[in-house]
Amino acid sequence: MELESSDLIAEAERCEAYAKKLREAVAIRGGSQAKATPPTRAPIAPAKEKRVAKSNEPPSPGEREIQVVEYLKSNPQPKTIAEIFRGLGLPRGTVRSVLKRGKDKFEKDRQKRWRLISPPAKPSTPAKQE
Image (cartoon, rainbow, N blue to C red):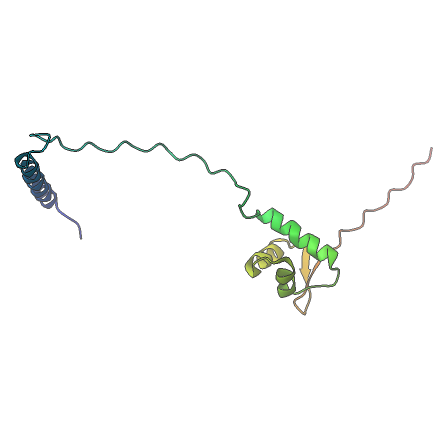
């Protein structure tokens, strides 16, 4: 519902009339100011400072990935998502997200168990002959 300009002006006039009655009532009761001044606007609060990470902040996604990698290194048998999140004490969605994003680090077998992908062996370089 959109208000018209005339409606807004009429509402402002009603508010001003009510404020005038309140000032008169204060003056009749012996208020400290016979003519009360209209209230001033509150000062604008300064902008909030940028949020700084605290020690109790949750780990970043990179830290979660490291936790999953370390867990799978220490448990060489393939693990289900349930085994991983229970073993680490992390939320199921967090573990799932880490595994899905790390396609270059993790692979899933047919039984939906996850394991680390072995890094490719570096080709040996032949010794230089003089």
